[in-house]
Image (cartoon, rainbow, N blue to C red; front, top):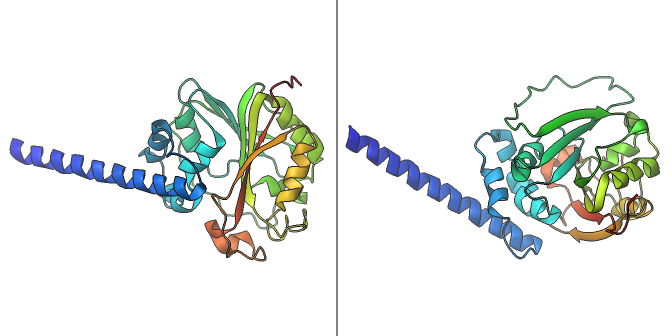
Length: 266
């Protein structure tokens, strides 16, 4: 019996090594595609490999590329991160592991100003075992965040803020609140579905896309500096004419990192 148990343990160990190796190769390939110089640090890899992540999240990893995306964002151990409109918590469950016990994640939902006529069926919540997450909700018209943040993050939702569903808020005031909440040198990372160049906010409600140029214009107008961009999630075969829900995670998405100047104290 002891021999059998030993063989089973060895088999489990070999399988763990194989899975870790495959994960490493996938991250390396993703990093190379993104033009990044190295795979994400071990604590990012460990957060992605965390066994408590639901299978539905893991199934999206190949398209959402969380490792290279988080490396691009620069989120690290000890950071205070605000995630805007976290949805079902795909990134929340990774961020809380990346920032660790000395960091904190604020998962901030935006309240709908207009309730949907046919609300979707309730989603079965996936428990998050992290204890360093604070969930909150805000009205877009009276928006604020905790102070001294290292990173503010939003993925595939910035376009929604231009719509009546969330009250069509004053984006200058909304973005100014984000700017104010960040530490000098802190960053705001925006990942969203790309719209036709020059279309502005035309497709935010119908196709759920936004023109990258409009995002840059809005955020630089409140004091942000465009730090960098990435083609990591670019899909050249997306003609920018389909609703994003029809393409799932295959849309052409831009990834932008804006920085609050270090000398700015406001």
